Image 1 (cartoon, rainbow, N blue to C red):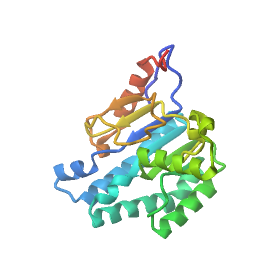
Image 2 (tube, helix red, strand yellow):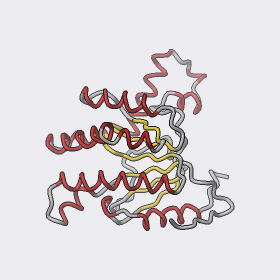
Image 3 (tube, helix red, strand yellow):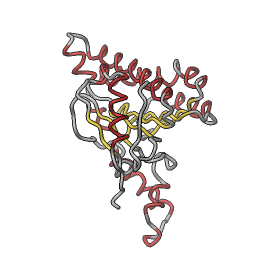
Image 4 (cartoon, rainbow, N blue to C red):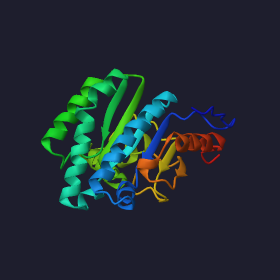
Length: 236
């Protein structure tokens, strides 16, 4: 673990968000099946979670399945759903024993009943854990989140003059989510693809050329060192 020296104007990193990109390209470059790429990415997600715990990062969010991912082949979607259900069931006691609270962020509509049941159980079992929070963004999109927030305000009969940033924040998928201090995207892409549009308005971004299964502790520490060197002024 590297020693990170923060710039005087850089607050401690309380929330790290990651767009885990490149599983399919990683597999293709190795002549492997797409499923094997997703499996490797799944294992790396668990590793990164442990590394973040070791570094005292209290909140980690990962973009696990977007609202656009439904457009992929039925076979690939099934693989991804199987992996997500595995994370919520077979890995659940491990998360709980480590003191990690699980939060699922995204639309519940369209998810199969077994995953919905797993989400409910995982969130309930871990709700009192305080060591860290791990947010899985499943069936998530930044624009759909804002659309759903507006619909909630309309359903509540909120008056136009009462709408401000605090009110909108209160109807997001996870209202208490601290804004991400840094967003990492792997595999050489430099866009956010709808990830946490509202929450990441003032986030620092780190673009990594490595495919997600190759993202390692060295790369994580490089990102944290980069964050520590930046001055965050929030428009001041």
